[in-house]
Length: 393
Image 1 (cartoon, rainbow, N blue to C red):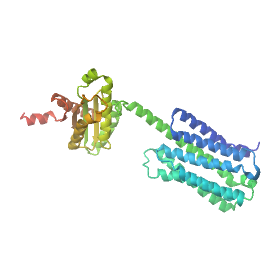
Image 2: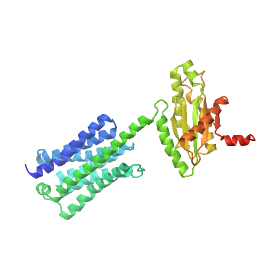
Image 3: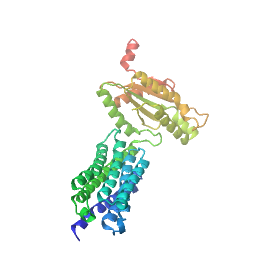
Image 4: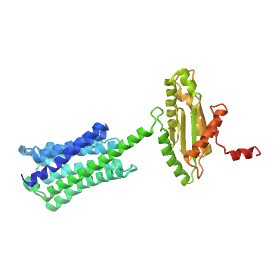
């Protein structure tokens, strides 16, 4: 077998390997974008096999399914990247682009045969589809390195598909036969650049899948399923980092700790299912009324903590009162009508030099004061030195 044959097996082999790899990932993580990636590489492998290894058909009709496969590869891979960001996939635009591309391809295959025209028809169509990924990702904030990598892989793919054939065909002047075409520098560049782009795109998306998997595991570790908020570990990690950023930039931060009143009695009288319903309602209520940037967690059985970066004493008190007043309405319909749940809250404000542990201790003291004064109220932490001064001590 000639070296050319092994070169022809390069892209099908790469496609099949990555199709299997993404399929195995999909079995572990049933995200649609991973399935799209597996399908894209499977389509690529089949297309290259039809084109380079399969038997030639009369009038070179085998090139029709092969190039449909190439366009399907572009559409599916574009869908994989776009879907990862939970953006709408432009299926209609991609379908129209593919149809136009194939119409020109058929014209240059059956109507007015031209190898150069066929190359441009498919390459530019696939390049336009890759450009749709660039357009979709352009306005997004690239939070991680992998987000920028995926963006640039799509951009380079679009440039490679559009600029390369135009440049090389203009320099070479087209091809008179497929024998000359397959021996040309152009086809060699297609084989190797396509392989490199496929590998770069696959590795980038695999890294993205791994990052998403790690993020999901972290959420599972840090989240409290019953309330829908963070658990204590997750809250302390995120709130501690947010508090340090606030204090470093000399911005305030409001911390409040809430405790559901008479919760043990509720469980004893109505059952744990009712108690769980109140916890779920509290979490949903906090997520609904909480401002952007708020970090909220369930730090104990019926105890919750909320940190609001940038909030001063008045904003903190208003939020605490909104949490307290709105709890009963949030739980209504999920618990017995005779039961009206209430909550007590302690509030404090972070100042330079105060860590999260000290701040939570202050909020706990304010919470204790709210309970001592009859519950269903909000109290703000006041240092003892201030109390002594106020009392003439």
